[in-house]
Length: 220
Image 1: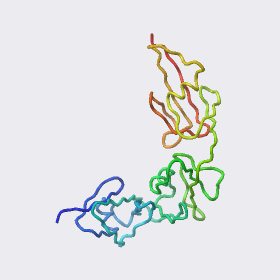
Image 2: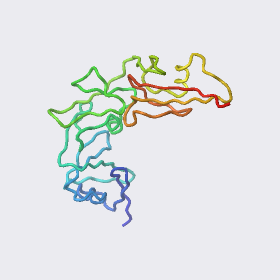
Image 3: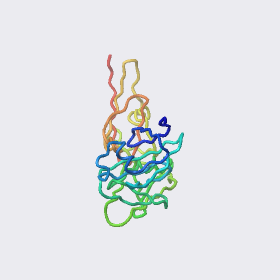
Image 4: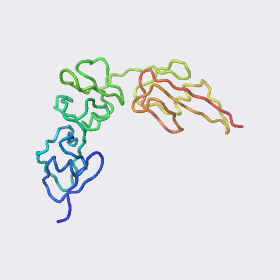
């Protein structure tokens, strides 16, 4: 029988002949050995839920189920917008919550326990500890962020900032000419890459307190 079903584990696509598969088989097919040493989390459907070793998962033609694995002996619980989630790691990233929960970037994430401080882009939430963390989303209230560009404070809107906009913020009258080249570097940026540089045409998510250094060089 042709293998007409498929699923994905940690980004790798695996094909199956049957329309029903056990959690143990999902693990072994992804070379997670021994299966009992790994927590398996199903991440499609807008929610994250654990899959037991003997639990049966139905497969459907034309639909790819997705799973994440964690080498762990326990599952952490949390809620996202009042829906129960399970996770195999002791922390979960803001990116994972958005991607799995299908939460758009025009909504900010926050914890019930710290509603005044949104979870930053690329940030993470610690799950291992006392109690269950409750993550919620809400519309972003208009506000400005303070950054530093060449040591000067600048107020910018939340979202992303471009290479070209940083040049405008760095120089009242940017130097011009065919031999003028600009470089833009940053630090105190969002995870997973808080330091780096930008090239013309590139943008980066901006967070409170981010620091930029912009230089102009005349190569003539």
